[in-house]
Amino acid sequence: MAGSRTGVRKGAVKTRTVRVERTSVTSSKTFDEVLNALAAGVGHPEMATLRREIGAARSYAELEAVVEKAAAGTGLMEFLRFDLGEVVRKERGAGTPRSVRLLVGNPLTMKRMLVHVPDAGSYAPATLLVDEREDGVHVTYDRMASLLGGYRNAEALKVARELDAKVEALVASAVR
Image 1 (cartoon, rainbow, N blue to C red):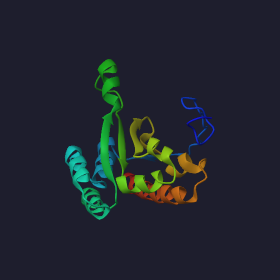
Image 2: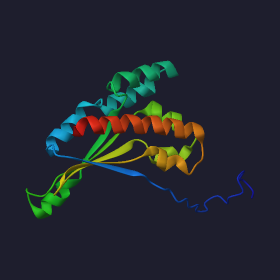
Image 3: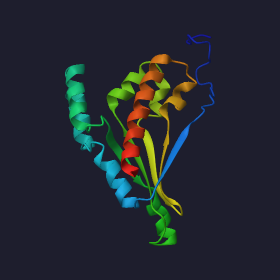
Image 4: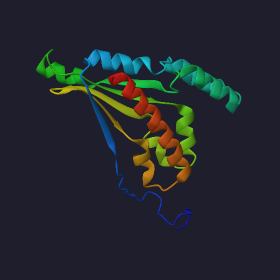
């Protein structure tokens, strides 16, 4: 096709089925204990400042230094937090179980996947869902390696597995 190197017409919709491995760990700890433990294991940069510092970096080495400073010892940082339960509480009241979605990751890790599989940007940073249920506090995570598995790129999968190990170690530590 004219203007397309892949033979796919520009503007055409391409659909891909993605298989997801979802892990869920249940803790007997309180919601606040689990959420605080997760928060303690990740960096909490002021995002506007981080974006400015990344933009001002004059080299990749400078960019790495900025990100490493912002990430905790785990190499992960919290990008965003959504209090999903707040919306439900508006209808159902204060006794409603809580639910928080955390977006965690590392821009350098994302870059290492993205250069091999551009669609990795759809999945990173990773989501951790922390929610109260009758049987305890659940922490749910979709493994990055499963999200990227269908792309069949060994390098991206290697990085995704490293990320999965970091996130799963963080979760295990938080729920113990």
